[in-house]
Length: 436
Image: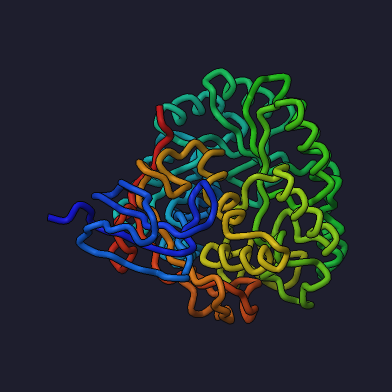
């Protein structure tokens, strides 16, 4: 009888202790041992990756699946196949862009019906905080959502309006009362305006970095006043970093993330008319990008997650003023971030911390985020040296629209194991719930 069901060996295994040679032994769905690379470990299957890297499955806490209601934008089957192909084994679905949005327990039930039996990776859910639903927050929390998403500026869809100042305070007080988390799209609507014309420069000018900074300042103050735990979503502007660093130094319950597109793309490089680059908040300058990397290195920004917000091509027209603002990158985040991180001298252990361990810790997803005994056997075989040219038509995303199309990236996912089982054509993902 074999002691283990699966052993995966690599001279470049990334564990919480760093990168080095190790063998990961799996029994059932769980990591049962982390041993020496050459240790004898009797198993039904023994995979030796040699000099290819072995990573924990990534945890993407910011994904817009859009089903039910807008499944022609993206759906659970396509999104989770793309996630697995990109090394993501756990994702949290955002409450908006689905119809109905996840702002009540009934809407959560509709989402579960749409997702049941269609997920190739494990999937959890954020609830939504919108005007008038403060009494729905505690029931959603009790059902096991990981927290609540709100906007401080218009969301782009009518059915998910932003919270005004008083409404935001009321929602934070309610969430603080039961120990929940609010994740926030932080832009000050008073500092936003309609683009003055069709170009990227005009769109960028319409959403200045000061709008992010002002909203983050107000949010940090409200978090301190209410005692609520908050997480700032998709930080694009380095103008926010000193506010976040000061909050962190004071011990405030405030964390923040950024996204692959803010770390790898730059306003100066946006081709004329390529509306696949449009997102809110926008991709900013090369100098700003350098400062975001510095914020990551110092821990001011703790997570790198996709904010995968896809749409059909017919919503990405005719220009930057009118096109839908969202970037599709769920399958490409690991290779995009690794390409730039390696160039800047960071290691795989850094990327794993930003894209697996820290997102799992931020959201409170148990048994995920690291290669350690007792965790789910979510593993990724990754070739960090292999270059590939992105072909949007060959991605698993439902619509072939991404700013990475035609871009050369480094790093290829070879195999993804979900709870010890390779992700193949048969969906075997499960629902994730906040631990009570």
